[in-house]
Image 1 (cartoon, rainbow, N blue to C red):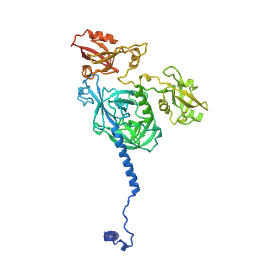
Image 2: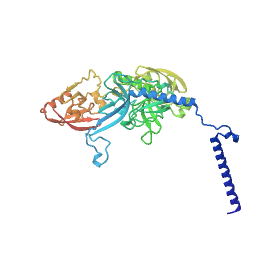
Image 3: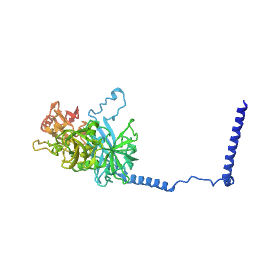
Image 4: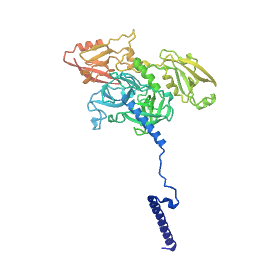
Length: 506
């Protein structure tokens, strides 16, 4: 070893010994209370700011208080859908695990909340859509069967009803008053029925998000979401997002994810949209929305620069009539190529705001439109029309539209079969699809063979009896009259886009 290395090693050893000695002596002095002998100040201990602790504890207490107040109003919704082909599961043919139940059913899980003491519950449309049976589990352990009052695919909202009049219910807050950074809590049953009444916290991450989950059936949907980082997973859908006063400020509806589960970005339908939709469904079973009567798109940057308007300006591509054939926008003086820049004094930051703003209005309401025509800013007042297709929106499975005088229907109860039937009128046929004719099933006795074994459900269409077409209730009854008591007969049923053959016993 060289002298340099030897000297360096010795120096390091000496330095280590000195430091070790200082640490040891200092530690001993501290233990003996003699630190002052070394000219040091009194030993410092870590002191937590009691005010900060109290503030954090107060926030925790607030969370607990909200959870205690809200949880009794939150429900778990379990849906069951009977497959059209019964237990004929294609997955089993290939030895694959089936997503369906062994009894030919498909189950779903979601959440909801009571909005009235007499049993009305708000949830998502996608939670209950196409379900044949809905069971609601309450915070106190009760399980109740629920009926659909009405469902609105446009806002992805639905209202259920259970029997009773003493339920804890939540009130609605003002979603327009929300601020980014505000604390919110999400309630629901994420991932599993065993995780009911899970509470997660977060903040409002953003407002006015126009890209939630797209409708799987390609329908137009509302596009104005609250974004939050409160943990939301499959099963949370339909559950309430509440503020620290325990008020509903949104209904959890979607997540942005690359894994299928929570990635920190969740979306909720704003409470002001929820309240308007729920009130209409509870009042009449249907939702009517105001209609401006335009086709629009984002104004190009070049056009915006030319006219000096902001990035949210909407370009009117066409003027369209409402459900009555009127043209609200044209009647108010709006024309093709105009640029809408504000509604009711609210400057558009995204052209898609038009949909969410107008959709909270009802036919007959008025709105002030600020628009730019050839560089000139103008204003006009539009009396909103009725949105085309509203007669097909929010139609609950146990609700029927009142027939017009020109199209009488023959509702009939076939008690021996447990069915309530109605002739498919031209108006109903237009809703169901071209060429559909037969007898509509409007109600089914749950204790009947028709429900248990034949898999008949409200909304299905009986098109044949014993392979002969039937186009009315009268023809159905005449065909059944030919069957001997106790005998079974074949029935062909149309269910959505598919049909299946089943049998009933007279």
